[in-house]
Length: 265
Image 1: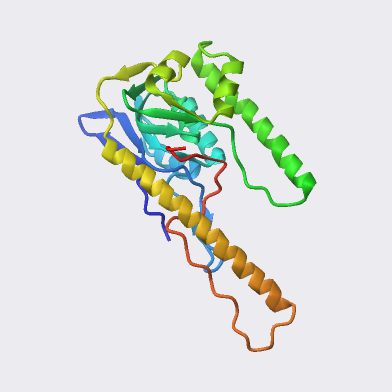
Image 2: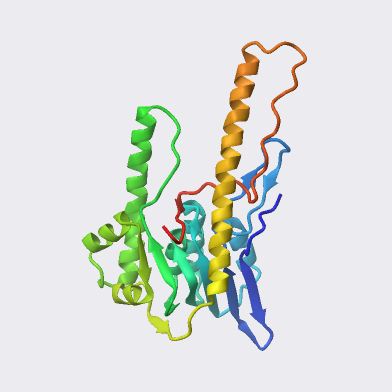
């Protein structure tokens, strides 16, 4: 089951073949796996998909990236950021609505970042799910702190000294939604256009993200109940009892969120 999302869109104009336009209008998600039916669920916003598609345009001299995303997987986003940074083409990033969470990190790969007067950038500390005993939870917290060291360096490097480590840490701790003017002052963008981004598209994207997150919650609740029923059955269910039902599938593929933040948070 493929996620019904606005995904990476690669466009190369016939009259300007040296320019590649990319649209990231969705959450950044890794490949999934269907544990009942088997097989990989391919994500079209993963680092592997991005790498394979980008390789189809080896001669482009300029990459124009349009972002309207509430974030997603840190691992996938870091891979996409690194691929963009390595690419020799000139990179211009336009924030069309939101560049939240890991999408803001991807935006930092731009040589020139442009925001609309009403676009926003959301920054916060990385998040993760943890299962296990107290030692597992302590290790998870330590790992998140280490991940944030690299995360902060990306923002600080892009800012060019216009924000201090202390100021950045305060913004991340507060889970801050930054305006275009604030991003300009901190060095997270280089230009603000007077043209407002389309609120309809931004609202649609946020609604899709909210529906996706709600579907994930329902999916994992049903999964937990199904697994609990399977364990109870293994402890002494009479022979012939049917196996637990497969939980309902979420609207979008299960995603390993490390950085996901609703735009309205």
